[in-house]
Image (cartoon, rainbow, N blue to C red; front, side):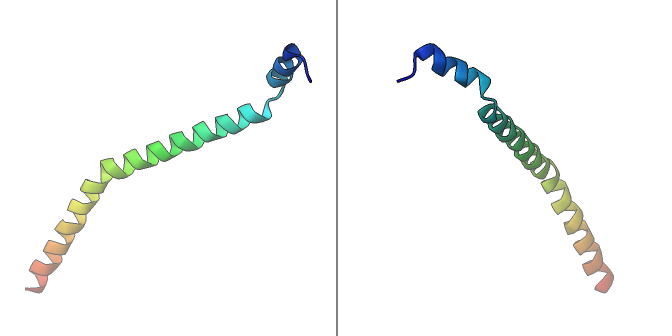
Length: 61
């Protein structure tokens, strides 16, 4: 069995797990920004398309 100080030193030297955590945080941040963008612009886009639809319907009537 390995001594505790050996396990700790191996853990501190390994950077593969840290890289995976960094990528996970980055992906989470991108997803959060994308979600916020959809929420922020979703209603505006819906209103825009409704106005366009109403103008087309009025032009055809």
